[in-house]
Image (cartoon, rainbow over all chains, first blue to last red; front, side, top):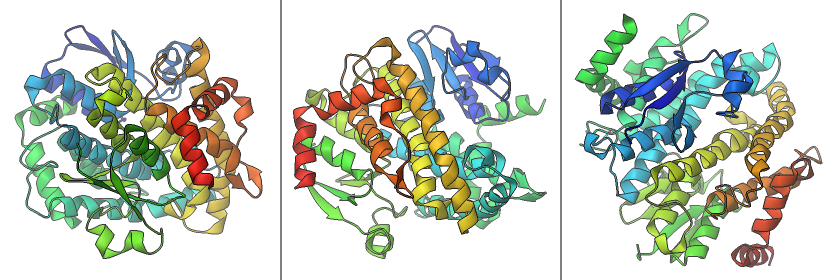
Length: 215
Length: 215
């Protein structure tokens, strides 16, 4: 895969993690920034991704969507980057199951806070869904904490995979995304996950993209 | 993969689709039926799958969870069954993105109807989330309808993959799962998806498992 890809994203979306991985593997790509209310729902983009969501990655074969899928694809098409257990159906599946848990349970819990209109109409329902989110997030992070209980440095043990920066971005959200001025959780409540967050944050590629984003 | 697998499920869950695929590829397996309120949350099962959900597939390497992951794993470990584009990262990713859309958008919409307590406390919030579900499902099935607009017989074109029976089970739910006695949607509103449903329902392996389930 050497052709230039087109990467559709929004800075507030989980697309950030895809960009990190594209940078890490040295894949040439062009970024198209879309706005949630306008360009993401415009016919030009819906012709590319009918779901009208980001991230999406346009390849010469067509578009790929859903962060875990895009991350898996980048890992598989850049085997030299060693970002997944390629050719090992069980280990690759275990990584994808972890990433899907982040997408379905953790991300959906955040979405109930920041996009409640997806799930129910009205302020009262939005308040009820927002009130539940800290509990759902705490339960999800407790499960993730348990995975690290054996002392493993990374999601899949000694091996660093795309699941690690993906988790990193959600761990970060736990402390930084706020509801009525309060964070939705406390990373410090999950010491193994907090240690993982620090470990991933020290990696040169991550330091570099965080610095670029802060600039 | 010839060792016997242990398949944890509940008849009301999406585990059914995993069982179909295990049957289709002729994989030996043993079924453990779990009850949502009791055995699914018991220590013995949480030691196997800390998420306390089904389906889960226990292999000699460990457990796999999340239906799209399990389906992808069965397809990859049984290449002779031709249930996925194995070794084609783009086509496999496209299939997994479709399956993840079913898991995240379609399944989560059904979950707001049947498991509202996952997302908010209280009857009022449950009513608001249930009221939204038919709209969310209609929007999701409209997107799926669009995918078939080019006349393709299956989700990935001419190729039958695990995405087809997975879609089949959700199309079926659209007509059969009810809210206050009314179905949550009408498959007839989506003629291409309805034709796909009939096409998959005619396959000998599907006829056989449906007959076994009805017996």
